[in-house]
Length: 409
Image 1 (cartoon, rainbow, N blue to C red):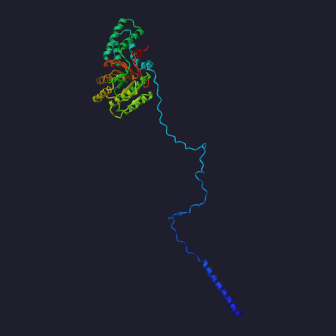
Image 2 (tube, rainbow, N blue to C red):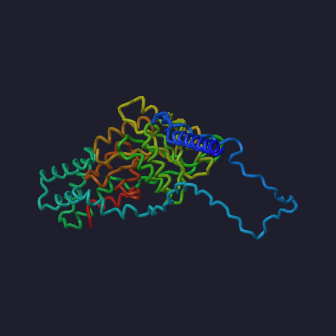
Image 3 (cartoon, rainbow, N blue to C red):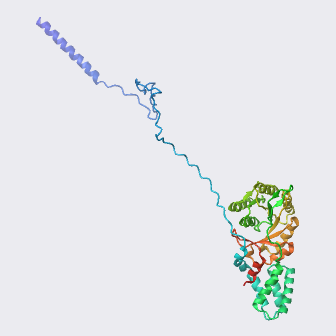
């Protein structure tokens, strides 16, 4: 019996040992490696499922509309700062031109510098002890060089010879007085040199502004002269409307508007290369509606050799006259062109009735005698002279001040 029990115990122990070995061997067996992954392929992240991010609902007590209070009336509300809008360009300040009275006297030094050779040259020749034929020829040459013209020169020399012969003894003061008298006679002191800007009457008897047309070839300073003339009129207390009828030069239109803006004068413009007569017509119409005193029309500066374009200038005047009379037609001439300016004057006088002349750049030439020549050619007076580049360097022409600048004190 004991033997049987012992055998059973041995069998159980042996069975336990065998099962332990089997379990141990299973634990030591390695699992197969995972399949290799491709490094360039990245698996997309898992998208959250519906409800994963949702917060667990909580039961809260909610307020009714009646329980919600409004903000106090004294409470400060934070408002957004307004966006700053870009500032509009400010208009240039309106200038007040200096008075025109005595303006030529103020510019006398500038005038005398350019005309010094004429006056002093004549005085030097007349002061010679013996005035022989050679001296008188030199006097003639001096006058011709100054563009006085052949006929006026001959008249002046003849009168000087006669008066010097009668005078006998010639002191410097006597010669200066003699020359002053003869030059004033040659230039003329009786002509009306005022710019006519009086109001006219329309076809139905209504009052219209004074109309001034400014004509001349390009390069003479025509547009600049028109702008400076506006300053002269404003300085004399008149309201002005400018008509930019030189539509073929955009720069001229802009330039004229700049002149007008500086003195508060309105500028009427038209389309580029538009009809100049239409712009002139609208300018006078605008002047009538605004009750302006004067309308200044800057016309196209046509070359005097182009007959068709010159005819267009005549058309401008005829169209403007549908409103009423043109009070003034000013011809702008460059004093430095000398006798060539007379050729221009003749052609313009054939197209429109010139009533006055404006001589520009008189400070830059010793040929002031062109004043005499152009007056003789056209039979109209020089009314204004330009003596510099400044805005107020356009002056009413005064024969006495001009001659005094020629011969000095």
